[in-house]
Length: 306
Image (cartoon, rainbow, N blue to C red; front, side):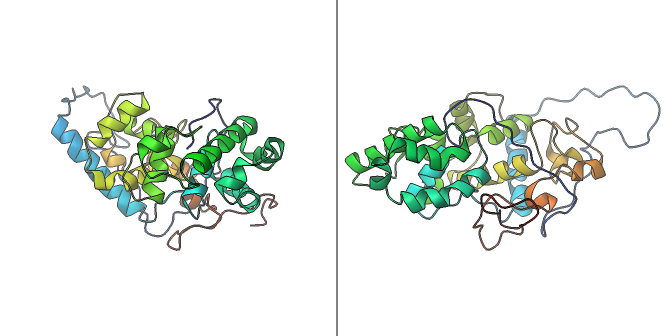
């Protein structure tokens, strides 16, 4: 979720056939799709442009149905206080939340407070966070933001967007994660999953994260912003993947104008599902009590040992 650095990462995950309890079954093709087994040429229908009102209604219905599919949606970074969430979010740039969660136990054991992290020897901090990638740049950000917290905020993470974005390595996206999940201040987390899905759903055609945030904020009441972000990110990580979305196993396929971009065969699509949707461990070592999947294994756990 963090803002820096900008290289691409490999986030491959296995799929399997199991779905968690409470998840909806995949829906039929959207209205107007060619029936299976039909023969003969048909003149394609000219789709009537969707009105703004119809789009807003469809968007809000998608949110309601995702709430039914993912009643357990939550931030997938382990944290116990605002400082831990801030640090974990910065570390999550260009890596998985799983890798961050496997790294932070040792990090916070060694540097439990902003004062401790501000005084860290850079090379020692780099070695601890090495598994998350880009460890030199991230170490500079962590020392910088910890120093700012110590010197400007009495060692406390500020609870406003204006103050958070002044910290080294902290941009609007990271600030919204911290505000929404550590302070209860509604915010939209426009990460790569969020941006990809809202464009596929035709809620916006914007690419710039701040413009995406503004357009989606206009569709939903402020009280929904934080949980909407979790639901969309959950769906993007588990079902609506970047390269090959699992359209045939998608519980909101009937509401998706981009249905068919991915695998539509239900059996093949189910094999693309990830994390608890595919019967595999999630990303948190300490997931919430209502999470239906398995906790993630600690760093260094041999394959199959979890």
